[in-house]
Length: 146
Image 1: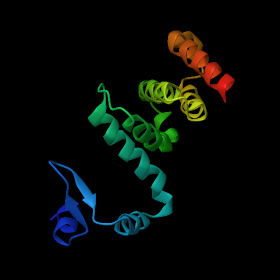
Image 2: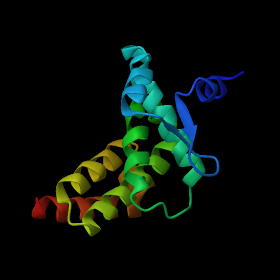
Image 3: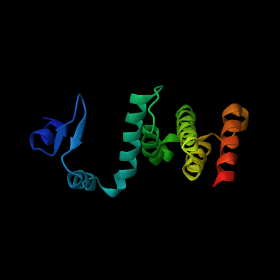
Image 4: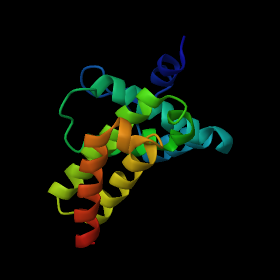
């Protein structure tokens, strides 16, 4: 019996549609989250973001992009260890920033675009020129409107 099956049997979570699970109440969700040691929460969010990212990679996920990016951004220290991953997550943050700009949320856009730039390697202007230029252009537009 894995953790999810046990939680289903005990009535802490319920099935909502095909393959979707939900806590029966927000207080149950909070209690479950509080069982995670504070020292592990950053890594928990990062791994959750990675799972969501792998499930949605290449798909138009709408506003879910904000959830994916915000969760995975908790793991900046792990992301920066892998340049290919850093660039992919930078692009994810750029898409979240663009989505926020589309909704006229310039402050949120600026935050995601800043995260995107911070994930690029030091030599990003040489190795990822087009991405660097696009990010800086978008950040300037978001900053101007804040």
